[in-house]
Image 1: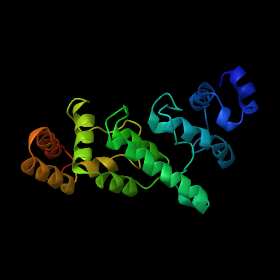
Image 2: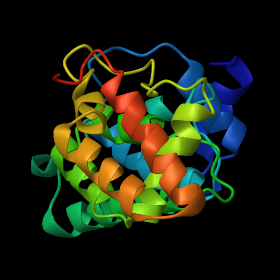
Image 3: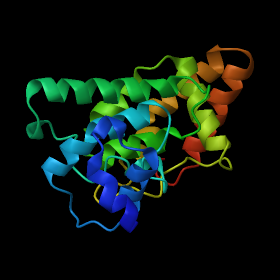
Image 4: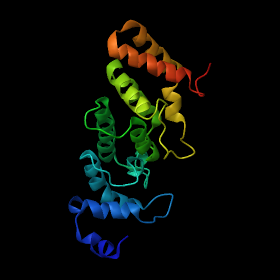
Length: 207
């Protein structure tokens, strides 16, 4: 960290910590696999506040914002703490039902929670429960806005990489997109069929 930031860091309550101080902490060297729980609990409310405001505590990408402690492991928390984190995860992911004002790609957001060791099954099931229109508009925006391929974040850990991609290219996803594509009209049907075509052309889709 910058010496002047490090010297002044603990003079601020977490809620009053300047954003550039937090970003400097994220840019500094740290000792894997994670920081101490004491440090993480001190900073976590401010980190969640920054994310909720639409900013990024880690300037390299939203994916790394929660990586420094396995806060998605419910055994780390009492019931009240876990309920806060669970509700934050649900609310934050559901912001991406809409395309308005959220520039991060869905897989980047899922990666952020996945690297924090939230259940990827829970994350994928949450997205699956979105309406057809919400899911189709989001996937089409993310995939075709990045060149027409199924988007995978670059930040996935080796033990997690591919899990959301398998969800994206699953048979049930293909069936859902195809069903909308042949039963709906207009732009929604066109987008659904484009997504289905991308799934069929994916090397991971079982032919």
